Structures are given as C-alpha cells and as structure tokens.
Length: 134
Image 1 (spheres, rainbow, N blue to C red):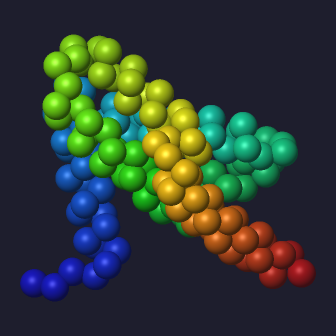
Image 2: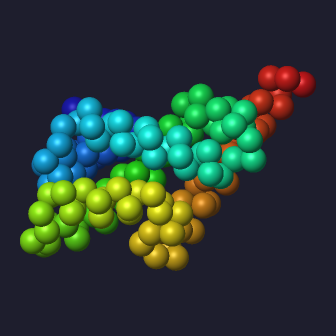
C-alpha cells in the first residue's frame, strides 16, 4: 500500500518517539507531554506577547512544524544515545536539554533548517490571519 508523504513523515515520527520512549524508559503520554510543554516554552520565549504565542500555539501548522523539528532532534539523540552507557535518568536530562535548545542543537546546518522552515511557517500564519481580518 502506498503512503502519502505526510503519512510517511507521521509514521517516521511515531517510530522515533517509540525508540526515544524505549531508551528513556517512559511512555508515549509522557513523551507527548514533554513535547507540548517544550513547544509552549519555546513560543513564549520567542513571541513578543502571550497573545502572539497563543496564536501560534493554536495553529495546526505550528504543530506540524514543531513535530518535524522535534523529530530532527529525536533522530540525532537516538543515534548518540544508542551507544551511550548512561543511566536512563541522566539520558532524560540530556534529551530534555537537547529539545530546550532546539534553535542551536546540534549544529549550524540544523539551525538553518529549523529557522528556514520556521520563517515559512510564521509567514504563512501571518498571511492567513491578515486575510481573515482584512
């Protein structure tokens, strides 16, 4: 059976999340809560006001973008963590730290990818809001 690009991306993200949960010894609910909390903190730090942050956080486009960025970090984490002898609690701290620094981790190439896609997503949301209120 053929899958759309979106379905393929979602299946890949689910597989990465499963691997992360296994490495960190926690369930999918905890993983999703962490992703949500980090997204809220990210937008609150980035936005000029709570109202702007709320606009982004209420948009499905933002969440698609966020999940995509999260998966990039998850993939980098999995590659490094598989070889690590760290205890699960230390690995969890490392994992959370990587995601808190989503703008800067792991290198300039990833930073560029994240910011380029963020600019496209933000521009699309602003255009949508202007048209809706114009």
